[in-house]
Image (cartoon, rainbow, N blue to C red; front, top):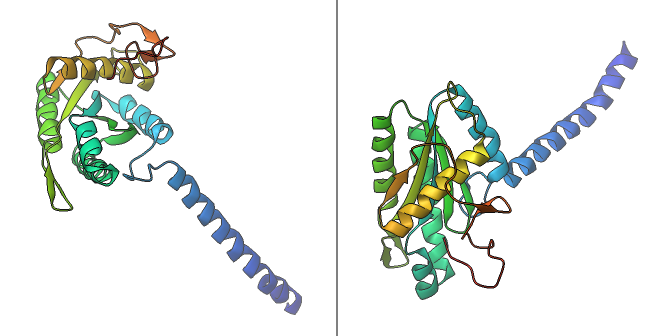
Amino acid sequence: MSQTLTALSAALPLAAGWSLHILRLRRRIEAARRDPLTGLLTRDGFAEGAARVLARGRSAVYVIDLDRFKEINDTHGHAAGDAVLRATGLRLSRWAADNAGMVVRLGGDEFAAVAPVFSREDLLRTLAELTEVLEEAVHTDGHVFTVGASVGAVAYDPATDAADVSALLRVADEQMYRSKRGGAPWMNALHLTPEQATVNGRRAGRRGTAASGTETAA
C-alpha cells in the first residue's frame, strides 16, 4: 500500500505538469488562430467554423472592405488606422454574436462573415443592419472618424446549393467590388456563379493579381 501511495505521489507532479503543458499548447494554438490586432479569427479558423454554419441551414457569406480607411491611415498615421480596425473588429464580433455568426479579418481593412439567414427579406435586413454598424463613428485620440464600408453578400442553402466557403467568399468578394465601384453600401449575388475571371484563385483586378506592375486596387 505504501509503495502504491509513493508511486502516486511521485506521478502527481508529472500529471500536473503535463496538464499545464497541454493547457499552454491549447492557448498557443488558439492564439495562432486569432488576429493579434482585432482578436478576430484568422482564415483557417474561420474556414472550419464557417463550413459548420453553412452545413446547418440557410445562411449568407459577406465580404467587407472599409471605405476611406487608407485616407485615415495615410493622414493620421498607423495608430489611428489600428484604432479603426480594432473598433471594426469589436463591432463585427458583437454583430456576429447577435446573429449566431462568425467573422474573420482577411487582411488589411478587409473582413468576412457568415451568419444564418432565413429568407431574402432577412438577408436584406441583415445587410442594412451590418452597414449601420460599420458606419458608426470611431472616437480615438481626440479624433472622430467615420469610415463606412462596402459589403458584398451571397446567400447559400445546403438543400439546393453546392459550394464551399472559398467559392462563396469569391462570389461575395465580386459583389463587394461592385458595391465599391458603384458607390452602393452593399450588393448581393443573385446566383453562385462567379462573374469575373480569377488569377491564382483571386478575382482579376485584385491587388497582387496583375501580371505587370500596374494593379487595380479593390
